Length: 517
Image (cartoon, rainbow, N blue to C red; front, side, top):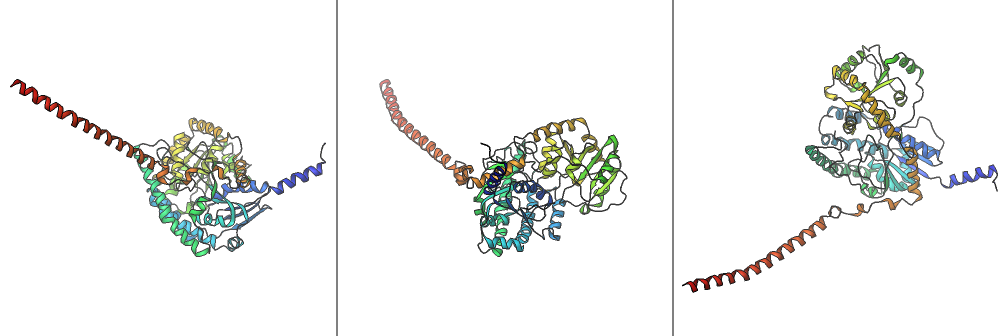
């Protein structure tokens, strides 16, 4: 018997309402690009009927009925701007040198988070959410408060697993490079030594330099004084921005779900001003230049700006240059834009190349839209990302500190060859080949954690082992003891046997001598 249409719709609505969850997304310290990575998941969860609260420095482009936004202010300060500037300045130093910048960055985020009036009200209201999703990078203050706000915790990493990832996952340093080193999974001996030392250094930095400062800041603002380490142990699932192309194959666990590229979408038509400029490029096409949302062109040295403009002026392609300031002596083939619809540009049929800082999100978009890149890594995981790009031959690397007009022209000339375009097309097919879209996969696992009481069955028993147990050092010690014991017994028995044999041999020899006499 068929149900009346109205009754069917009512039943569907009832099911949706009964399965609707209260979800809190915490990313008080996040760049614009990292917030953009979260937005598709936030929209998808809201579209499934869940009530979503978002704590972030940036709001959605368009408000949605069942999304409540709490905007964190005072993230972009003179101090944070100077930190980024110094980070770029010393980008050719070892990453352990710039690791000292993580602490002040994190504390800036902590203060802005705890001083927000709406956040204070959330903490005062107590545990009211079914699940809390926390940005995994430098949001430890927010992570510590997650158990006070929700039943279950999910972490979302804007990259692959960070070096101090709290969830147990074997990451052998023999072939899993630290994300802050310019290495691929094929490392030589000295690179593997550096990889091991860097991993140890970052873990030491996190546990003994960053965490104590974070815990002190939490103590100042939250009476319950929740511990970051306790929040680590309560994490049910980690969503990572890993994809099968730009992140090399490495071990995983059931409670690690890769949703890389969930922000990648098809291109929309360009705004008329940009479309008119692009159309004038003819068959030569255009090149897009952007250093992301964290690096400001005005902070670059004038010499570097001159090299860029000189190189662009000698190109036959048009150049769309993302730049927040006006520049003098702008070549006629260059158009400055303070903001650009990046994916719409990358998906345009006339684009020829993308000159980028090598951020993972930008590289994923370039692979998705089949655009070869010239990468100028500056900070964070960018050197590692670009090393992978070079390995796959879908782009070239330029050193920021030695960039010149000639080096940039040479790189662009090489990148426009057919081999790079063919390679990026091949890897784009791999990148797009999913059994389920990453956004839908991420939303499914968020719901899965709530449906299955925190999904404790996904948790590895290895998380309960100490270092000696995990590395089987206690077993090795026992085997070594057994080996030494057996060896001692064998030597003792052999000694006794020889002691009995040798005297007999001596007596026989003496008797023989006497007979001869």
